[in-house]
Structure formats: structure tokens, C-alpha cells
Length: 562
Image 1 (cartoon, rainbow, N blue to C red):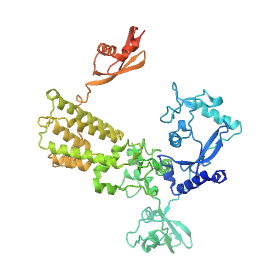
Image 2: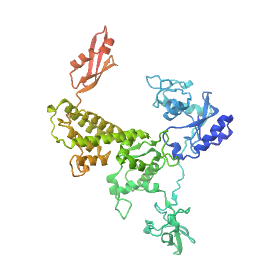
Image 3: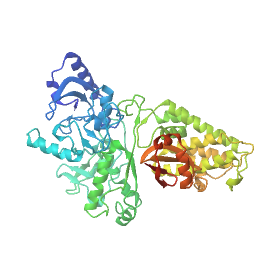
Image 4: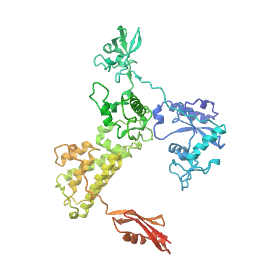
């Protein structure tokens, strides 16, 4: 069980001096973190209080920890962990050696804490759950809730995270708050005919004074009251930038409209957004308002959609070498400018893309930069070698040498792979496939190769979205005058991408017994012959007769033996 560092109950806990000192030190460190840092994805930490809570259903003692990923402002400020079935809790318990109890078994499976490498988070059958053992977990949740209420052990309550939004900011940049402060009339809204209120561009002093820079601009502040006509002042504050970013995508549909925020017809034509990409840290900020504004505008008839996007893609956070989220407040941010100045922008881009899948966290390391630089330098050397070669774009596979044929196949498979990976934002595997192509090109006989320059040309084109500067340079080396971005995306030879061999599964009575490499598109009879000759398969059909076989071309054969 984890309790928030700010929770007042901590003071009432009976702790020995050792645990008390550790808890106080941890609370002091937690107080220096922002809420965003504390709730961001990444490795969680905490400290044991030496105290225990009692599970009211089982009567068992549960270790009580202080952990800063728990917030005092949400619910009770205390969270019960379920380490076997929540990945964050699982990692926390593995880190600190806290016992893990399996309470849900997967259908047809058998989990134990010793054989688990990650939390099991899917539905299943309840175990180690007293009277609830044997229930399917989705049903068990309702049964337990009902039992807790009936026994007077608790009550059902919905907790909300909704809080007031303080939108005023004491800075120049932002949308001015359209209010006028009049000594006679009080706070008066700026008339609609005078909107939008524009920021002044003249007498602005940005020296920090503990107030908005606009407060010292007579050009901006001095105004007549719209109601009584007497001298008054504008509100000096500007709005939180979330106010603008909550609807900016709508303005994109009609950016030059001077009469309204956007045309309803153009919004109808363009929206909703097909795929929206952003960081998970915006889930309780920008993305919430992004949806709120859309639903509000839908309700008042400005939009036909009530959801702004069809799909949301959350990219991973960047962690430092200790696994902590990089943030200004922790002082562990590595400046991109320093990396770019030392290694170049393309090296930084490749290192970021290759470090992990786009949706996963990136553990930043200097080794990643070194590897990215090595990859790009290698491509550059290949380009220098290719410039003297003749380009052959009309390849006939039957006329190629074995090494050229292998490279030509790999080239086309790589183009197809990169094209697909860009569509799904899997940039790390796209780069990995380019690295594999380089390895194949390394084996070519450069004096006689028919495909080397073609490989280099198309490699430059598929590299361009990832490393645009390097790709442009290679394009020039290869003899092209126009920008590489004026060339078309390379197509691939559909015949060349076909594999000559596939991994084929052999089952005996429905159970996997072997995986073998077989030529593509062989017949059922040929596949059965190869399967029966496999040594592992032979052991499972010994003294048995094959009464039937089920064949799925290029995938599997199931031998039914009696």
C-alpha cells in the first residue's frame, strides 16, 4: 500500500528512528518535484515506513510505503497495490523485494511470482481470493464491491480529478484577457466589435518586475470604459497558452479567415483529425481541453464532430541514464543544441528514432549517439564509392549474380518495410532495416555490381525523412542537382520482395513440435515429406500412423497421428 508524501496520516504513524529518518528525507525530495514529474511514466520509487496496514477482507498485513506517484489531492491519497496485475506496481515490488501474490490466473495458464517477467493485466480466473476463488475477474469485481458494502467495510464512491483552471498568466506572450477595469463600472468585457484585443509591439519592457510586462505599457493599458466612457485600464494578464492550443487545429482548417475563428463548412470537410500525436504527460492538460473545447463547440452548433481526433498516439518520454524523466525542474535535461553542435542534427534524430519504439520511453545514452553517427558515416562512405558507378534502373533478376540478387531483394524488402513502418510510426525498425541493407551491400563485388548504385540511390530516398541533411548531401554526391525532396518516393519490385523460403510450423495432433525452413509455395505432399523427415517430429509420431494432415500453404501442417 502506497501513501502520498503530503498525506497527514504519515505524522500519526508509529515508526522507529531509522524508518522515520528515511521517510522524512524522502518527503523532502518529493516536495521538490512537480506533479507532472511525479505522475509521468517511468520508474517509480518510494520508501518503507516500517508500518503495516491490515487488509479488511483477508486480515493479512500489507507493507505501507510512502511513494510520490500517489497524489494527496486524488481520492484518499492512499493507493492499494496489486503487483501481479499492474505493471507499475509489479516493477515497484520487484525493485524493492516486496512479496507478489497472484490473484488472477490467465485462461488455461498457471502463473507464479517466480516465473513472471511482467504483470498479467488481462481478465482471468480469481485465485487466492477466499470465497471469490473460481470467479471470472470481471464478475468478481462487482461481487467484491457488493460484499464490501454489505459487510460495512466501505462504500462505493466515484472520485473526480476535475479542478479549477487558473488561466491568467503574467507574461506578454498569450491571448490578452478581454476585460477592462473601470473605477466606476467595475470589470467590463471588451465589446465584441473590438475583438480581438491585439498585443502591443511598441513600449514593452521585458525586465522581470513580478507582474505582466503589459502592465507597464501605456499604449496597451490606457483605454476608455465601454459603458461610461471614462478612463479605465485593460486587464494586464494574458491567458494560459492551453486556451489557444485547445482549438488551434480548428484554425488550421481556415487560417486566413478574418471574420470568424473558422468556417463551419471547412471544419466539416477536414475534421476529425485522423491521427493526433503527443506526449502522455498532456493527458490531464492539453488533451483534456482539446476534447472539452470540441464538445462545447459541437453543443453550440459550430462543429458537426464531438471528438477532435479518430486516433491518439502517445509517444514515449525521454529518460536520463538513471531512468528518470528528463525535466527542467530536475535539472537532468540534455540540451539538443549541444548534441547538434557536436554531432549534427541528423545524428540526434537517428539516435532518438532508433533508441526505442515511438510509444515507449527512451533511455538516453551517449552510446546511442555514437551508434547513430557510425551508421550515417557508413552511408556517406558508401555514397562516395557509388558515385563512379553506372546507375541501372531496369534490373532483371534472372541476369543478376547471387550477391547482386540478394542485395536487390533486400533493397526492395527494405523499401516496403520502411514505407510500412513510417505509416505506423515504428521508426526504430525502419532504421534497423536500413542497417541490414547496408550489411548486405557490404558483401557486393563493387567492380562488377549491377545494383550497388541503385541501392545507394533508393537508400538515400528512404533515409531522407529520418536524416534529411545527410540524404540531401548523398543525393548531390550521386550527381543530382534538384533536391532529393523533389524526387518521388521509391516504389518497390513486388516480385523481388517475395521470400524464397518461409518459416513453416509443424504440429502433431495440434501441438507445436517443430519449425522448419521450406521453399515458398511447395505442395502439401512436399511439405508433409519434409515434416516427417524432421528428427523432432519423428519422436512424436514413433509407432503411430498418420491418419490425416491439415495443410495451410506457407504457414503450417498439422499431422494427426493415432
